[in-house]
Every structure is written in C-alpha cells, then in structure tokens.
Length: 428
Ligand code: URA
Image (cartoon, rainbow, N blue to C red; front, side):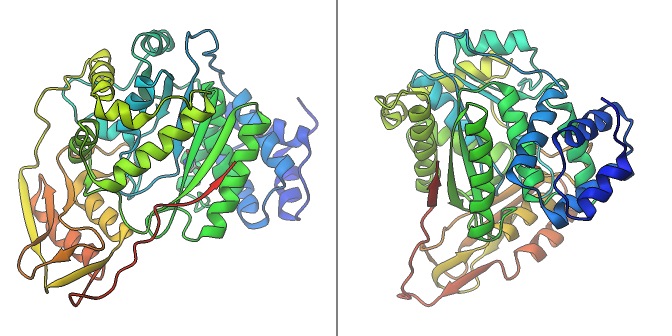
C-alpha cells in the first residue's frame, strides 16, 4: 500500500480526525516492517491515548494487527474451543485450575499466555516454577495436545500478531499502555488470531487492576465484546473485583500450589467461585452448558486433566515446588476484624520480593511472593501471623514491608463488615 506517510497519520489523530481504513492498514503494516519508526508510532500512540478512537477505527486497527501475522484454526478439532483472558490482577491464578477444568468438561482450551510485567503476575512465570515444564510449543504440538488432553497453556509464538508484540513493548516505555482502544485491540487481536470459538473476558476493576473504576472497566469490556462478536467469536465479559487480591497467595510456585488445592476440591472460596463462574461462561459459549464444572472438581477429573496437561509439556506435576530461601513473618498489630486488604500493596510487595520483573528480560524467582493469612471479613489476633513474605534475598524484605504499610485495615472486633461482590457485572 502506498500514498500515506507517518506524519500525515500522526497529524490526523493529533487533530482529532477519524483515521481511514487505508491509513490504519498502512501504518500497522509499515510499523511492523520498520518503515514507520518507533518514535513515530510513539507519537501516534500518545495521540490515540489523548484523543481516542471510534469503534470503527478500533475494529480496523485490530484487524490490521491480526493480519500482521498468522491466524490459527482449530475448527478441525473434535471438540469446541473456548478461552478466557484476564486483564491482569494480583493473586490471579485462575487460568491454572480453569483450563484443565474446562477441558475435563469436554471443551478444548487453547490458551496463549504471557509473562508478567509490573505488579501483576504472568501465567507462564507461574507454570515455569514446575520442574521441567516448557512454555514454548510448536503449532503442531499445540494442536496434538488440544486433541489428546484438551488444554494447552503456552507462550504465543512470534507469528501471532507481531504488530502487537512490537507496539506493546513500545507502549510499555512511552506511558501509553492505558489507552482503552489500544488495550482492547491488543488483547482482542491476539485472542481472535488464536482461533478460539468462544471467549470469556475477566475485566478486573480496582486498585490492583489497570482499570481503577467500574465505568472505565465497562467501556473496555464493551469495546472488547463488540470486537470479538464482530469477528465471529462468541464473547462475554465479567467485571470482577480487584481491590482485594485473589485467594491467599501472590507469587509463582505458591500460586501453583494454591491452584492445585482448588483442583483437589479445596482452596480459597473466592478462587473457587471465580473459577466456576468463568468455567460456566466458557462452557455456555461453547454450547456445553449441560455440564456442571463443580462436579468435575469434586470427582477428580479436573485434577487428572491438570496432571496430563503439565506432563504433556514435560513438567512433573508430582515434583516438589521450589521454596524461597528466606521468609519473614508480619504479625497483626492489633486484634479485630480485617476490613481491607489492598491488592496493589500486596502486588507491589510480591514484585519487590522477586516474584515479578521490572524489565521484560529480568528473571523471576520461583519461590518468591506473599502469603496472607486472613482475608477481609476474617478475625485477626494481635501478634499472630498476618503475612509471610518469601524471597531468595533477605535484603528485599525492607522494601516489600514498605509497600504493605497502609495496605490493610483492622477494626475492633464486632465491626460490621460487608464483602464486596466478586463478580460485579456481566457484559455480552
Ligand atoms: N494486555 C495486553 O495483552 N495488552 C494490553 O494492551 C494490556 C494488557
């Protein structure tokens, strides 16, 4: 395509014009090929962040990013496919129990995941704490595993929406991650290219999420549902609370251990509730709402699918998980009811302990993270453990403790406490 140049496209968006289809197609293609330079795309991304995009522009931008790479096709599998995507939260290990659970219900889950950046963890980082487990699969291996096990969680290959890979890395260092058109097109280009038949979006709202308020989260969810539906993917979104971290752990190996508890029929109530809510949506989207996923947790078939899924990627599901070399216990400063536990404070503490990374090439510590021993609504006793901090490096504890300061409230015993609902709304 010709007839366009970067300055023309940047100026159009700077001056609040709607970009044409051919401008969008050209700029994504030219950026992927290196004809549009990083500094030009940065300026365009900032103009989009400040001036927004219409739904038509977002849909075209998404299509152009899909067209930058390959599109997978699972239509010849013997079962329907469904996937979920979370916009990212603290202690959000739901993919781990969810993928094998849905597979155990007869629906295949082709989950292409990422590594974490910043205070929210990445699914691949968590799974890589399992001895031997391998994130990189060829398309053939992925297809074969979907047919045999029914669930795959692996790294997205370089050929899937390469324009997004380049643009996301650029947004990360130019203050342009938070633009709703860019977030929606980034997520949906990958999910549509991945070839899933049904998609459930878990859009997080609260201090620990990208979207701090419910109106922004609803706009993001509606935008993504429209993109998915327009592309022929059965798409729904749940808005879920991320002001409190999920479960009782944030880290890598410790989140795997908590997920295995859920698969064994136990685990924290909120993790079980959200896993089942998302599983029901995925099954409904794939036309299998005749199956109750709670039965598959109870009868051990979800656990069997988990073990098969881990083994198929060379992991040992029965091996001991790595343990951090050092630990530090924080006790409750007073007795009463825990009325608030801030997701961002916990996420930052886990990150500072070594569970997350500051730059995308940094390693993560498998054993690092935070365990909290009470959830909002629980009674706590002065001097009893409230948090356990885990890290391979003792020097990390001081900064992690700083991030927990002001991150929780304990009120006198008997203070009434009303839990916020986990699932806030459903769109689709
Ligand atoms: N996750 C993505 O994949 N892209 C974004 O832009 C934000 C979150």
